Image (cartoon, rainbow over all chains, first blue to last red; front, side, top):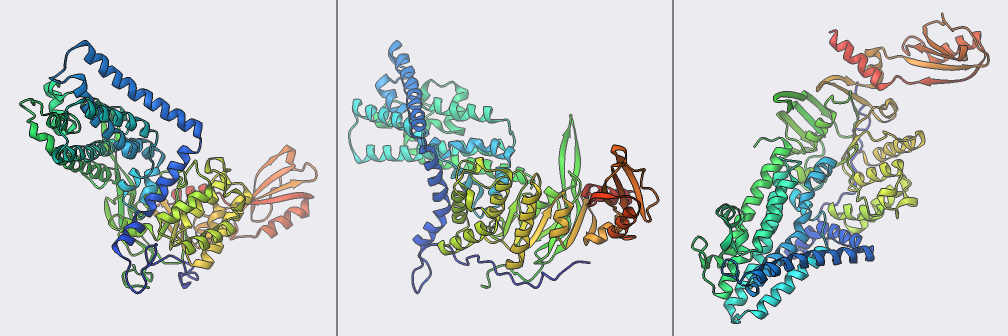
Length: 301
Length: 327
């Protein structure tokens, strides 16, 4: 019934048995070598994405310019607002520059690396996600490294300029503590916003048309992060102070840096807790992602 | 072969009672829909299997369970000696899949660049990558469009590139979902020749879904027919024809308009066109041969041209379904 004349043919496929990369003679590859080999797939994809975005120079330049203009418009909006009043939530314009700089720089960097995660509904509809399943890398790592949005660099540069201006115009004592706090705030801020993108992607498994909804959190979160949390209404405090800890990306570190009084419900020492906020965000993000993937595969949950 | 590698000696695909149900929302009511129902099948390494069935019969769902994309509702599945969901990443190194509408290539990049990225994704060392890419470019005749972005390729070129992309890491098992759909006769022919050669060189196991009887006839030594999620037939192609009594059709173009060619032995007149200039006769290949029918026709009329139509796969499947329904 079944022709088995092919069954005896030995499998002679030239598949490698060891990871690629230079081998150390006379010993197993070092950890660094293995790590480099492990990262190679992502590096190659990202390099090709970057090349294809910069291939059309005029186009890319226009993208950069429009990004800078958008970011400036938002900064100008804040400036106009603070010109009209003497201060909002106990912060003056030169002080809010720091909040804006920190939040916008970290958001832009996270957006650069993770922003395309909200393409997930498109990937789901086109079946691209199924293609990710057929490759020997973790799904989320493939999604994150499937693209890089270089024009966000323009936006990040506006955030950086605001941050530098904020640091210059405010009276901040240069000390190990202030430099350390700044570094911690920057790294944690990027991680927190990145987690926000991943959370949104995880939720999009359930609500394929839910990009509008998750955008409300992602971009609403970013907007909230550039404002003094002391004026947030109670509902915003719950959502962006604790659940998605946006206050930790700009506002709270700024209070510590400038030694300003803090609202009672967000004590000032929380400014040092940005890494905890980032960890919490990632725990939430990975949970949402896992939950979403389980839903997609139909494994219950 | 190192001991940590999965066994290459056992069956390449083994399912037992494999079942998958979906909950679909029908207005406000929810109902269970069984896409794959109690599928038990074993495919040995090196086999070439055609997996056929009507649209919605459960073919894609089966493939997704074989490759670890979907979790089975019930039953077990082993692919290349691995559990597809648990060992997805290890399995990905041994299976190549071309899904009908899902492209693995980067739309805006030249074909060559896509291959380079895929080689990195599969950890192929430089020399293996060069050798394998060279082999595939050669056999699939892709040299002329390697530098062209994927979005500018013709359908035939794109399908060749997709198949090369799925085969770049020299998988033990290749799963092709409708590989020849929409291709012209020549492209189909080339693709089939390539697959035959690829299997002869590497002993690759092939599982393909198709609506094209020619694919099954030229590529597969075993046929699985699935009907509403259940396995309806497992055997070779001639056996399927015998089971269903599928007929071949002789189409003759005549020199002059002629009356209907009735009463040809073991053949049945189907219809005539253009006052009998073109006539179609059905015959059962088990009862007679095309040559005998043709000889009987030429005794009566002058034939200008003729073709023999293979039984349509949809027709075979329909007949099989009908047979099953009537018990």
